[in-house]
Image 1 (spheres, helix red, strand yellow):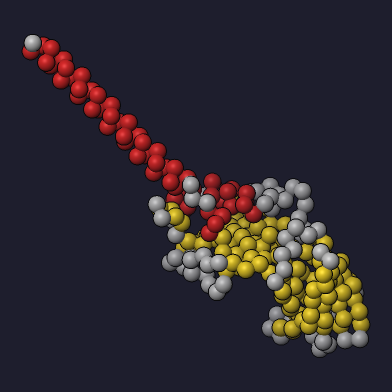
Image 2: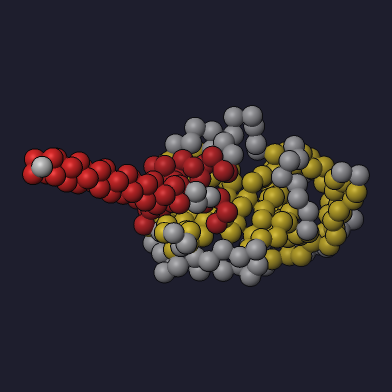
Length: 231
């Protein structure tokens, strides 16, 4: 009987150990899945997902498709975003009044462009989503002159999407994202801006709630991270 009791006791002990191991694995799996379930793209508080460029007769246009939080604050806390089209015009001089017009999906948009003396360029913005457009045919009334500029998107079939760029940043900087992620989500906000300097690039900024910023420059076609700066 004594031997039988010990055998039974040993069997129960092993069962308890197995149950504890299973429970530990289950809790670990739940913890890992909770972190994996965080969609970091939801924490993007500024997104510039298209860029149009065009020039004619000494005038050059830059048009951005953007979504920005309101109010716009680099504080590590994402807010609700609004979608806009922002247009910048470089002109030979800023003395003349400038009126912009462009058609989009059967409607005409535009208006008076304001001149920024500090930046030395004209500016116009409106509530409009042009993210999927390939080009924007703009007409500028500059003083008594009329200039036509066809601004074309820098996006091509092999341009990486903003969402995939963020996945690349996250994968190659997993420790940074893990340190800012807990069961409540991500403690920060993210900027993704499409830029163009002889070729398309992405600027990606990860802003902590301490105002620390981790900035990355990424090749928009290869996904290669070209530079990182922490400030």
